[in-house]
Image 1 (cartoon, one colour):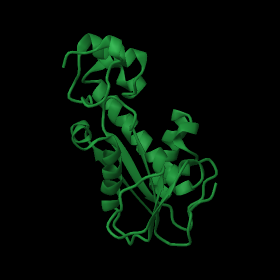
Image 2 (image 1 turned 90 degrees about the vertical axis):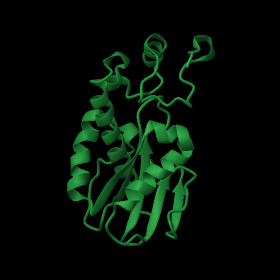
Image 3 (image 1 turned 135 degrees about the horizontal axis):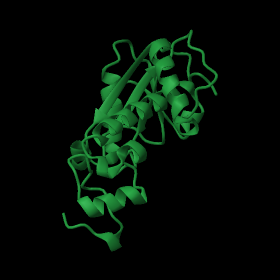
Image 4 (image 1 turned 30 degrees about the horizontal axis):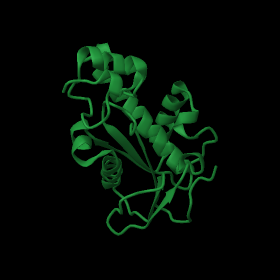
Length: 198
């Protein structure tokens, strides 16, 4: 895995977590690793165990040159759609980087331009570039922590385990208990045969 795409000092890697979920926010991270950053374990967050992600989260926070998290709520997701919400979460993360911004590289094939800073979309970027992989780890761990926190409020949905993804168990709970303030009402929360009266 390459550390970065370019020779720019302030190349920002971006990724998000939670796009396919039925509940909870979409969370993005923006990371600038810096010249001295080294780690041979970092990978796409989906390829790592939870334990490994959590230890890498601390490592990235302590050793990256800059990093930040951006969050977009379920209500905002319903208002602007999930694709735009993903871009907005990345923009919010980038907003918080208090440094020059030379280039943004993003996991995936689409992005909304951030001011006039050049950007590059890279399909499977989180398994090709370490700064995107680091962003994927931060986005995933921060979102998971948030879902575990709100699970205490609504334990019947078992978000601490399913993290808001459309598992059978999560859908069965929606059918039984209805929706919460954390559900995305514009998403197809139940298959057609289990339709929900909203």
